[in-house]
Image (cartoon, rainbow, N blue to C red; front, top):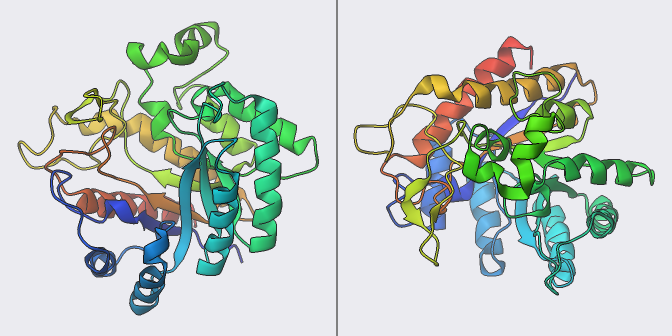
Length: 328
């Protein structure tokens, strides 16, 4: 019998309005438990919170099944090793790895450097029992989407399985988005057909990653083509958020800074359906879990008036329905 697909929540999303302060850890675990729809939580806790995380996880019956962090090559290798080993001790099956675009010495990381980092992390993760999953994410090497398949095949050519985290919101929000498609010359790649962003079109990049069997972990945060910038939030330099989060269900009037149109979510939903359809046919059940990630960062939900938790709960309900229809 195929192992069940589990649904969790990234603990930064255990809050209501993104304009509110972050609740304390005990409150967030209680919120997750009270929601009654999550199988686990997703987080690599801060060093001073590890014991509290473990205690709350056990108290509420919510395993810490996944975690994650971001790393600069040339500076953070020891931190990545530590977090993989910590994940293993906490019972995490996967560690979501974001590799920054720039090396610690300032150059753009090369494919060979990313491959070497993956091979080393995979070796450590296999021993620790917590596998690294390199994530598709803005501001990281993987935002240049064609590089993902290139590195994955380089890893496979060395006899090692490649594992990635799919967060396809980072793909969807670039559709029909001139400003975002100016990055990494994405517009030219789309025009030439070398890169297909639309999940309804043949040869799209989400389908490529999924069909190759690379996705071991996934994040679910809704986004729409040409997603509105997050004018309700800003970075320390004053720039408004890039806009990689959209409400999954209609928020109350005035709770979101742009008009809401549920029909715009269909490309994002199709990306998730691509993943679920593949999982329904994968007897090995490589994809073990999907974490909702409606979060309050500047590029996401900072300053919003809608409940991040309520959006996550609604999203899990929809995903479970789609999964059930496929026999998952």
